[in-house]
Length: 527
Image (cartoon, rainbow, N blue to C red; front, side, top):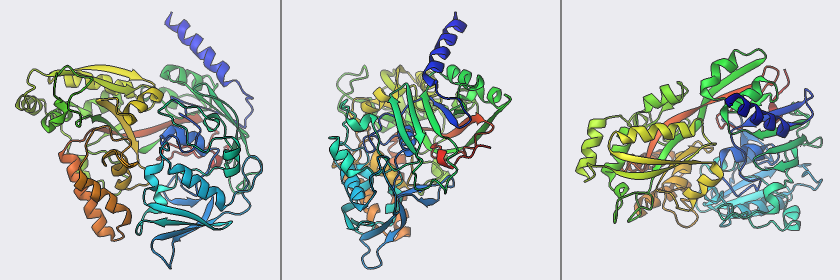
């Protein structure tokens, strides 16, 4: 019966993938889909990954992490005014519908990305004005000199102003509110691939842009990309082994050896710029998801520390992740400015000490709480949560697990409707300021939108905001260290591990592992 069920599921997936199977078709699968195609509605990794094939930012990071020009060919602070960055734009670029790309589109896109329903607005907090000097020069005015402005722009995509206005989609999609707009399922970008069709959570088909500005600069070996989300791990692997797909973005860790030893397939691995962790709502007077009446056990730092001590990260690494993770003690990856090996080693498993802290806090008999977890976003996300359920049970905390797709999970965090949750965070800027803006700053004034902890410290918020304009890097790094010390001491989050990327592909598909887990398909040759 199990075999029959999996065969039926695989047959359905094969039907969804159905596309010309010529050598130039990249048949790509991953556990999850893009949440939306609106360029500014969701700041989420897989969503950016799909959009990166069709839309482009001004600058981008290559697989080494170094900046590369995209729609801007040159950029930097103005020699005349430290509060102004100047961007020289690439000339001769056209949108997919043939319209010319100009500075007007950049100004429009950045103003759109700063609006309330945009999930990208935190990246632009320091920008007070974006102005077109001429058709191919843009100036960005910042509130004080911003030493790392360019690092914030690598996922900020440029839209065609006229197309957006003509299709009544100037307002950024309200994703959390369940809104659907024209930009949700339609694209008019400048990227290497054009959207052919979009069926959310089923299939997205893209065709090579023969008029792409970089047509002669990149291999663009694939004339077509067919992306299919396949949530079930066994079905993903079966599709790869059968040849129905030729690129799998997330190989289940339990299948790495089998896939790596299969004829005609290769597995590529590398460290990912992402940390997996649990968040806890310490800010509420009472919790919706627990059995403690009239107070909030998570508001006591001793409880938060005890919960962290109960998590056996080494066991998760060995059993759940099959060795494919690195235990974490802070919510910053090693790639990031502000990360230290000392802080990353601070999370220790100690059940006796955890029980003592629970008793000291008045919860010696424990309590129950719901853990909200995605089941299609991170590597073995539901498995990690299941392991945590058992570990927290050892200190008297009864955890009721609710694992759901990311499209329903993430709004729980951004809407403040979860008390205990899993989240993963990548840092495309490679700087701690990005983490602080989204996850530590109080949720106010378009900042802290992913901070579901309820933590709000005015003094710390002021230090976070000061980072955007402090050009004394030694002083700035000292401030970053001070902020991290508070985050660590307050146990705002429970770090679990740094993810490891595992990609598999046919041996003639030359996609190289990217720390952001964002395949750069236009760069990939056919070997």
